Length: 478
Image (tube, rainbow, N blue to C red; front, side, top):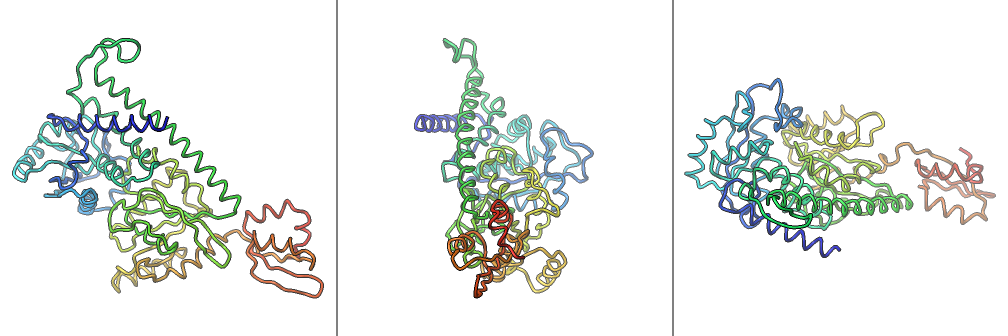
């Protein structure tokens, strides 16, 4: 069954690439053979004033955090996204708009002005750093006579390049197909022809585009089944870790915030960690020792970004469940980045969409990374802010500064809600004491003439198990 599905996937991709790179410009995909080195024009359209209302297709989900960033910063991030695909950015421009045009997003006059740049610079691809409807994308392509990709399409292409594991490939393909399905009507206009047939599949009068839409729907259904199995498998793994009483610590943060570098430092692993957006896509989990005899599981997750496509959030549900179920969430922030506060809000927006809210009982701890990149003045300001905020860790995973203290902090964070108990044992109860050493954290031992008293730090899980043991409860003296 798996072999048949994989074969179908290859055939679909082959057909998709052939269709996308036909003679018509009415398409939106980037062929893998044409990505690297393509000449690109990057555009960031932005309004002069905050709009009273947004029509369908505008980035409403990012409106709240857009005000925290300058248009120049948004354009710079879009260029970085292109560089993550090894595209050759020939020009990057800000387009200041007085209003949004429903048909083309940007005014027709501005688009015609861009046509001269496209022609003179041999531009092969235009990146619009916004969310376009299928109709807007098609109209812009017809005016510019060149391929156009919006922000969502670009991020999906990066994820497609980065996915390596079978699970990651499935998740990205799911998101890609969901995005592509809504654009068949404008992307594959050369398929709007009738074909004959027999039986229930491809009956008389069915157009080729309807056939391809059905093919995509079938593939989405198959991937959804496979991802459901992935979700069940992850749930079983989590159950196994809980039985072993290993707490799980999840690293989250904006893309390129330094999560993988910190992960490598703490675990001595060699996960890909580069100064590149979305360097990490496939999640990685490793065991770490946070104190003598106490271990935890550290999980490195995919980086977030502003206006993360909803298709990706839905497709990566199985992976993001690891964050939701984690005992502790470490929000890693690049404190040296000028838009660090806006990036924080973007990450929190996605976490809130997963049902994780800030509050007194919140299990999120902020880690301000890359302090080695701060000059003396900014560093002093940052340290003062951290002192005022209180529950913040400052470190640099590159130089190692603050990392040893952070490991001790991890132990404290995971120990929240614990109780210090004194438990007495007879000298003939070696097995019972061994059980406590295994499942609790013994911080002191007092061997007396008639008994041994262990001072134990017990977390919620251990306290729950102890409450079910009347004999053990009876031995607690404090």
